[in-house]
Image 1 (cartoon, rainbow, N blue to C red):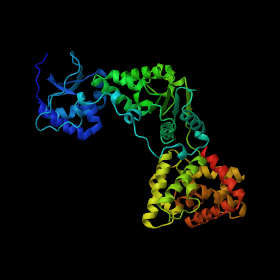
Image 2 (cartoon, helix red, strand yellow; image 1 turned 180 degrees about the horizontal axis):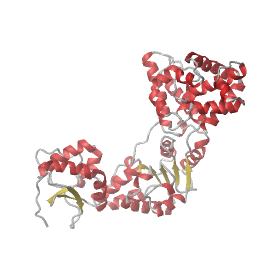
Image 3 (cartoon, rainbow, N blue to C red; image 1 turned 30 degrees about the horizontal axis):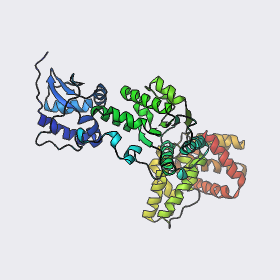
Image 4 (cartoon, helix red, strand yellow; image 1 turned 90 degrees about the vertical axis):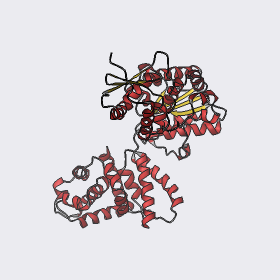
Length: 468
């Protein structure tokens, strides 16, 4: 055993904590750094006492490198940090030395027990977004089952499927539906104890209860709710102690016929490092996938949002075709789609211009590039040739007969709509034609699309084939 020495004094540790708080943010500091107790340095290892093994593992995984870097700056002999639970239990925090910042939170013994928290705080672990209600949720084929299931749960009647598990990618509406359920229950069934929070917040409350020896209060709070809603459950995967407590909470509520609603970024069976017994429990209820949005749903969402923007910008004009263009081009994420529309209205208002295709492409160039489909001009040309039963060489070639000119213009129009290629680039792909020729072709198809039902149908069929 090497000689133990405390090169870093408590005052220096207090100063280092101030630096760490600025680096990791106040919440992370209060939850993970402030509870650490610096124990000393031995043989190049800086030791910290922690309340629980779980906390030590979490801090090591997420903040270990940062702590080592900061400590090594004060003592170049330090090569490693470790976290241990002292044999006598959780350590008392040393008082802040003079010159160290005062704690931002009251001492643990001054904090009320979770069960004694104000009712509103207890019922709503996370704030609800006023925008996320059922009447603002646009329903289409990709999300109609999830919407119907959420509506049923929001009625607050007999539990028919437990849990309800909603899953899907970012921006597809999981959190919107979770908030909508909570709003509906709060307004129509105020007598119910509804607790909505993220899986991360569940973990923070659990760790705080461990640290402050308030596990009984924690268990009573979570087992007293009528409806438990946990968002982004994948966050607790791999965190053994939190999973253990989540599992017991889950079982207690199901056994008590209390409703549970969970969301995740994928189905329970596909969440890595989630315990099998939790996966099994989650799969016992109704598991609903929110599919990626289709064109019609995205267009409906945009049309709904336009009405909200018109209230803010009543004098702005929106040219036909712009919403359709955005619904075609921005397909992966509804949040990005809504953000693009917000930016477009704000920009048009600032520069005093009509919202047309040119403005949309200029204002949203970065979003359009990021959202660009894997559709190429060459693929569009092949699909159009097949659809109109003409040779690809004739579509691209110099012949100007009407039987070729119209399909060529359709292909140019789709290339403009579905790719980020410029007009000159599109022209070069069509036998070296000038960009004004492409511009004329695009404009002509835009006109025919509104007047000729056959052209409109052709465009829709081709678009679906290319999207698929």
